[in-house]
Amino acid sequence: MIDYRITTKEGFDHKIGELISMLEHTRSVTLEELSDISREELEYVDDPGGNAIGSLLMHIAAIEHVHQIISFEERDLTEEESSTWGKALNLGNLTNQHNHGLDADDYLEALQKVRSVTVSAFSRLSDHWLHEERKWENGVSYNFYYIWYHVMEDEINHRGQIRLLRRKYRKRSN
Image (spheres, rainbow, N blue to C red):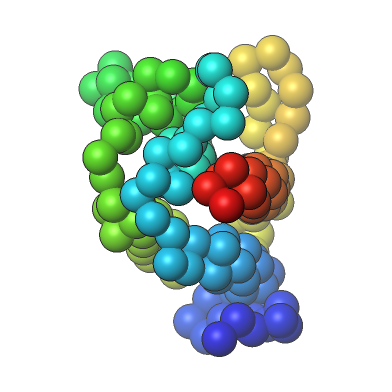
């Protein structure tokens, strides 16, 4: 059952606990959207160059993984990490082909594995860390709170695409 309250999670500083609560809510709603999804729906592409639902799910996992590296390790992806996650980050036809044949459980497992790393890392951090400022290579400032806001924002955006693709698939199938 989805919790429609932002709460402070036990074992975390106040703001980090609220952030975990928001991340969990965002993911719960995404997972609810996937109930009873078929492999055909996961692989459905509405237009040439578009994204399949499965690819969007791997993208959500990849975005979170990359933001773990940026915020928890304060570095960029290595070449090996880029070869593993790059297709999912960029989306499109190559990603659709790469994920072809996976079941819903495969995507759910990828999302869960990445999330468990996030929660574990947050358990060792303080609210002060969220507000620490850094600068991108172009000189633009950011803080870690923004990084994790962006992770939620990205998932919510792609969840909208998932809803649309499911609706189009069902309409086409009827």
